[in-house]
Image (cartoon, rainbow, N blue to C red; front, side, top):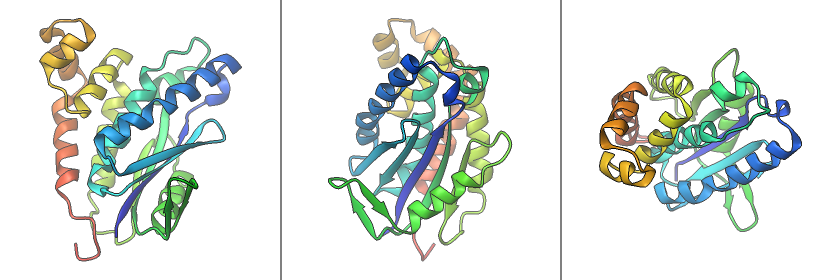
Length: 215
């Protein structure tokens, strides 16, 4: 079976006060129900307070979940965080491959996919904040696509990320407007400014791919 894993760490987490760091940890824990709403057969854990690992049995949902996590982090407000955190929020690497152990009860993830995402995170350089490693390396266009959509979200405001997060969960403009107490026109304006259509197209393309050794 092919899984997707996500390895991630918060950008410039040490710039925050102890109080904001604890608030951020609680905020990250609130993401796991969102992730399960996107892919029910998924789970995640926080490591060392500022790092995360997640597993998805449906590899096709990996990009939607990664971008949702990015938006979730960028919605977090910290008066003590530096500009690097406010712009990038989190660095993430996806791994696509098999797993030897996937045990949510014991909190154990082991195997090819998690090694790939962990290595991808360690190999990041410069301003790169989203990458992917595949065991079979058959979708060579994906690093470019992921880099493009990550750039859109890096440029997005906190309010735009709040709307993108709801759109990535499948809500339409009217539902988001009612949820946030703003007009549908405002939702549309924020969506357009954040390049939602391009993000949506990339996510749907990712979900259309076959992640297995026969690809």
